[in-house]
Image (cartoon, rainbow, N blue to C red; front, side, top):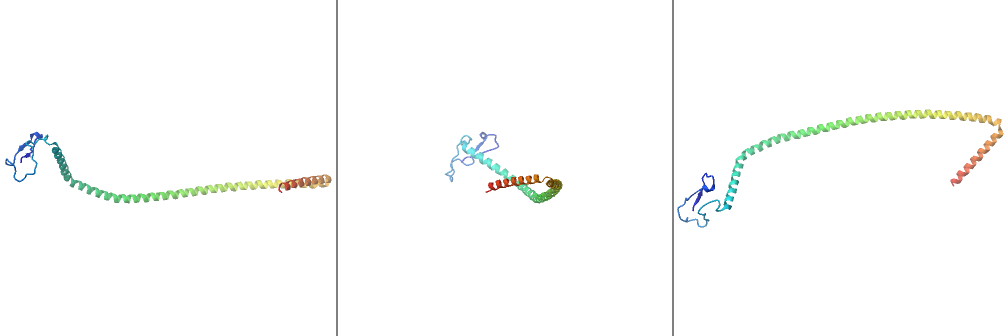
Amino acid sequence: MGEVLRTEAASPDECQMTNTMPAGKPPSVPDLPELPQRASPASNPAWNRSAEAVGRSVGTAVAEVRRLPRRIDDLKSRIHVVGENAGTTVSDVRNSAEARTAALREAAEVGLLEFADKAAAYTEEVGMRASERMRSLRRRAWWTLENARGALRRQMWEAGQWKPQRPLHTIAVAASAAFAFGVLLRIWRSSHE
């Protein structure tokens, strides 16, 4: 059987055909398909595509295998760096969380103290205003009561003076006041029954 040997040729047409076997049929290989007399890319394009795909795959696999030790070293260094950074990161996160918690607690305490101070100042101010208002109202009530007492004393004194001087007028005023009071009581009683 003839075998195709490729040399460093620029195109498939420059391939050389050599026959490594003696002329005639090989005695022990009856089932193998025979190659065409002349091997060219145009004779079987499916085989050519398959061969190119296999060649590319083998070349890519060889290149990846050659790069494998370097990739493993890169991964080792990355894992080492990640391990160191992970320990540092966890402690940093813990320290940061503790610091934030402490800062929040301190801010809350300061806020509560400020609120308590403001509340105390407001309460004191409201208490002082209420106390001042109560003193003012007491003074006014005392003056009003004193004025009413004075007016009542004057009226009583004048009434005391009026009774002996005008007895008939006193009786007429008392009778008319009693009559008016009786009418008012009767109206009130009839509206509530």
